[in-house]
Length: 207
Image (tube, rainbow, N blue to C red):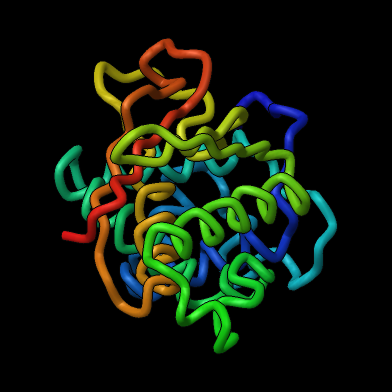
């Protein structure tokens, strides 16, 4: 078992992520992952769909490591990206992370404004419902999205940034608020590489 972090996601966020992993890996895949990550208690027993903060960041970190152990760095990266995208599409959007994004007034805003509103809303959602404090600043041609306590890489040490699940969530969130456009998201700093926080640059021009 991983050393508990004392920091938590709400059960519902963890449930959404596990369901997204099952969607991209299949039932046998997720069961093998949970065994490998020493979380067999979650097999056929995902956290309940409530907002109690009970899913430890350390368990989230070992899931990420397990994906890499199973699929290798490259395969794991692709799978984590897909799971991140699926978790936004399947449920995180319902958290109010995109509050107002369907309103007509929002739809006529310039793309840059939509991105800023959407990213700010996403950061506020994670900060409000979980112990993952997130913040947003604006650079020149990009936004700077910072995760101050990142569960994706919790307890992991790597030479390069590894928070692909977070990139997937950001990409799908941006696609949602922009009405289907894709944007480049790059992780510039990662806690797993020794930095203080996980810092992402979200470029304003769509791909």
